[in-house]
Length: 437
Image 1: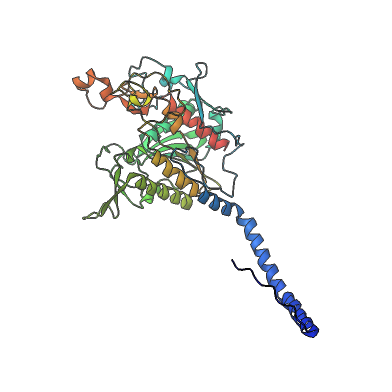
Image 2: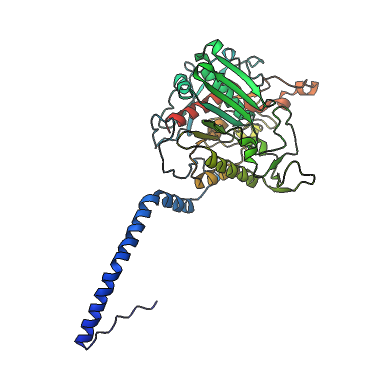
């Protein structure tokens, strides 16, 4: 690299004096502009410092496939609606262990909550044990705040809370109602369905509050949007169609999204680029993880445009794990969750049914986003609960064949969860994030 040469000294004193005077005059003329420029740079640095740091940190931070602590980009307004305190920033409430707590679990009895669907009432359908109800989630290094039903109902006074997604989100929705309904007098509550069962509404009349569920398994418009008849193997989602369902979510004060299971049909997924009304449909196949990324981008964009960050809260529940292969946890080959009554103790356990590349997509999109959305990272803690599924202890919508009856593993449901049970913990985590973010 060449060095800059110093200017030679002048032999003429008058020339030197003249140059010096001109230099001083130039500096005098330029100084107001320099001062203004420096002041502007300082102003921008103060005003957007957090944003700039967030951008640089995103570029420098690697997104590991097994990184399960996912944080959105920094939000300038850190005071979130409904918050009454702060959690310990050093404690991750989603990392911990399950502890046996027979004296404080379950949080309600199955027979005391008439809103539980027959697909989730395991005791009524013959499950012989209740051990799955007695486990409490214990974060490492801190405690979860106790679920306060009175606080939740008072906070929802005059408001709408809505769970949007698939049947797993509907299970969390029913769990929330079971945690609250005993405080409401019998004549002051109701449950109704609308829009061909796409929307279910629980009303707490004295509170002028509703807790709702809306069926949208992909969040986007799809060929599986019928809340009753949606068993379609060749699934199709329309690109950029968040408003198709989103128009029903506007005006909601607390939104809880989920979407995962319905995307898992293979390594590729079909995306409709036009309309379902088109006579000739423009369909493309993309990797499933990228199709899921499209949904995440659409959801975050919709939230940014339609939710008031000063008045509303949005939550996203991560993928719910299934336990369809007992060999994953060291069990017998060809087994699954059937007859499982104990939790998995290995803290590093990750089942083959949970795709890490999807978790990575969530992490990448949430880290880039400035949308104030609270992430409920239930995947790892739920993966330990092979004991908590409905298995064979649920209403069967079709008569079982002799072959199925002879082999219960063949029809065990290792996707959905008994209530009361695991999904009550999901709502305890939601409660913690809502009031103590």
